[in-house]
Picture 1 (cartoon, each protein chain N blue to C red):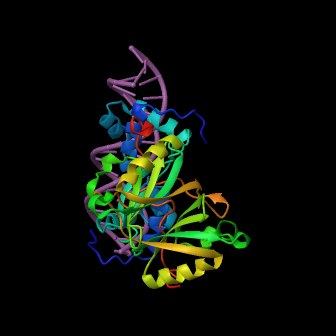
Picture 2 (tube, protein in one colour):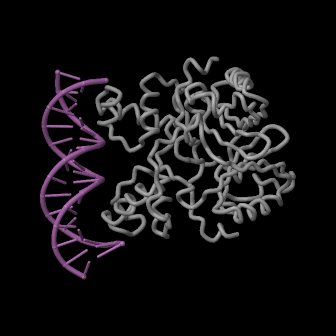
Picture 3 (tube, each protein chain N blue to C red):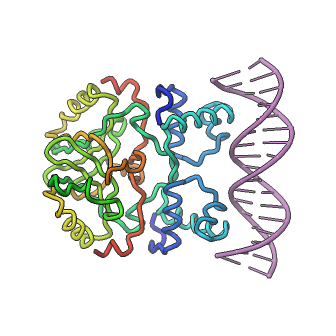
Length: 166
Length: 166
DNA sequence: AATGAAAAAACTCCTGT
DNA sequence: ACAGGAGTTTTTTCATT
C-alpha cells in the first residue's frame, strides 16, 4: 500500500483538506482552489491514491436521517473461546459500524447503530453472549456547542430491514 | 434538514450502498448498476441530498498512511466548570476527530489521532485539565479477521504540523 | 421512469518553461 | 515539477414518449 515513504508536503495537505470536504471536485476546480493547474493537481492526487493515503471516495450519510438514530459505543471483554473478533463475520452484526481492538481490560471497542431502543436492546443481548460488556449510549455528537461534521463511519450505513426489528 | 418523512425504499438503499463505496460514480454508471436510467437515478440522488440523508461526498483518508498512526478513545468526566464541550473550540484540539456526549458516569467520548506516542502523551496531559480521563488505545481495527473499511472519521484528517510535536 | 439528442464539462495529452 | 491550451471523451440535462 504505502509505496512511497509518505512524506506529504504543504500542497498535499491542501489537496487532502479540499478533497475530504468535497470528494467530487474536478481537477480544474481543485487546482483553482490551491492555485495549481489541473494536470499538476491530477498527478498529485494520483500519487496520493497510489501511495494509499487516499483510499477511496464515498457519500456521507446521516444515519439518523436514514432511520438509525441510536448510536452507542460498546466495550467487550470477550471470553477467549468465542471472541467476537474470531467467531463472527461482519454480516452477523450489520449494526456494528466500527470494531477496534483495544489494549487493556476490555479487548474490543464497538461503535454500533440501531433503529430504535428496542432494536438496540436486542443487539446488546445478542452481543452479550461473547462476554462481559460495558455500554455507552451517545446522546449527541457535538463539539464546542456545534454539531460536528456529518456522521461518517468505518462501514457504510446499510438498510435496517429485517435485522432492525430483532 | 429532514424535508421528507424519510422513508427510504429498496432502490434508495441500493443507491446509498453504491454511493457510499464510490461517491464519484456518474449517474450513468450508478444507473447501470441498479438497473435504472441516468435521469431517474439523478432525481433519486437529489431527493436524498435535499432530505439530508446524503450530507456530502468526501475522500477517504488512511490516517496512518498520512502520518497519524496512533488511534485512541478517551472518556472524559469533565468538571462542570470547564467541560470540554463548552470551553474549547475545535481548533484547540486538532487531534480530536469525534466528540460524543454520553449518558452515564463519563460525559464525553473522544476519538483522537496522534502522530506518535510522544504526541499522544502530550495530548492526554492537555486534555487532563478538563477532568478525569480514561484512555483506550486502539491496537488494530479489524472485524472477523480482516481490516474493516478504510479509516473515515467525523472530521477530516488534518496536517500534523506544529501541533503534532506538542 | 426510459429514451435519445444537445449542451456542457471533464480528462488527458502535448508542448513549453 | 508545473502551466497552458487543444482535442477527445464523458456526463449531464432536457424534451418527448
